[in-house]
Image 1: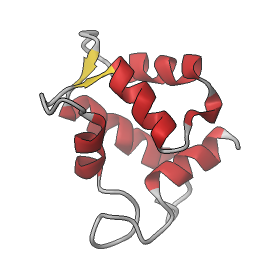
Image 2: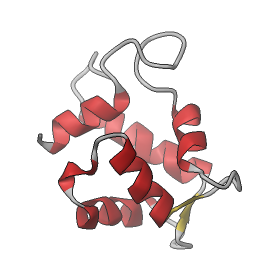
Image 3: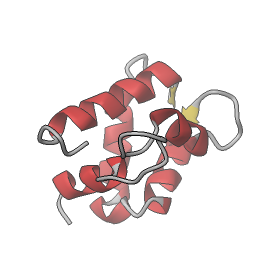
Length: 99
């Protein structure tokens, strides 16, 4: 599976848990990734969650590289704003109407 299809799978192509227009609700996804409920997603949380979602086939190294790109303040954790920015970026990579 290529990265485009992984992103499409992650965001959902319809019938997701957003309660409306299909796809995943980014707030729900954030809460699922934040294993200890502290409002931050650690790199290990991120790697584990991506694998759990079935997107780990790109490899742990690639997943960790994505985490580092999303961690714009370089504190080793994603806060909600960093995670939402990553989610929106991923959505922007999909063709119109796919997210």
